Length: 160
Image 1: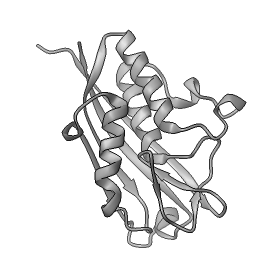
Image 2 (image 1 turned 45 degrees about the vertical axis):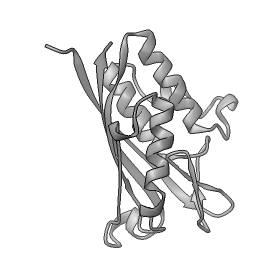
Image 3 (image 1 turned 180 degrees about the vertical axis):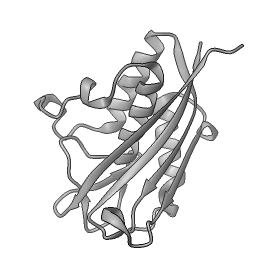
């Protein structure tokens, strides 16, 4: 039997003015951006938490605390590359990742292929092992009202 594990990740950030909107490592043209200590990339953060969870390595807050000035404005794709290095050190590789971004606006479909490519490159896997979806919440809740965005991710890791 193949040694594999699964993890789930979730992240949320408030939308605000004066920030770039970064999702899956891609800058998305929009009048608002996500507020956070790093670049606030909710998609990449959810993916990292799913991977760390699968490996039993805690969460991104433990590895990249928002109290550490070293991570102020950090590129989340670089942080994801660090997570992948931690997994590799322990004999794991990414099997696949499936993620969903919850956002009322902007429409994300045109940017999903680039997000998949960017995430896959950071995880050192083929793009077909990374699935990204986007959905609105029919104007319900904080994502539906445009107050913020959230993302869920599920990851499978496999022993190398």
